[in-house]
Length: 79
Image 1: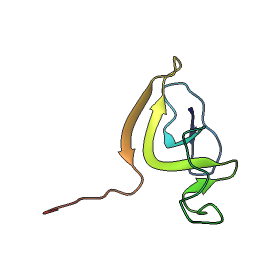
Image 2 (image 1 turned 135 degrees about the vertical axis):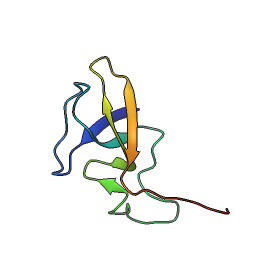
Image 3 (image 1 turned 30 degrees about the horizontal axis):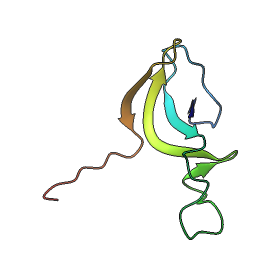
């Protein structure tokens, strides 16, 4: 699995423990499209086959991932 952080401007961010951005992943266990779809969902995948997780965080210089938020806060109640 290959992770990366992407800023609001779409640029990849450094793994310095300070930069905060959206976590994106790709790898052999990440699907290229949703089942039954001919093309990848433009909102779920960025260029290069990166899955946009919707998680926000930072990656420390030793590779540890720290999740801090969600792009869209979802509150489920009574469900």
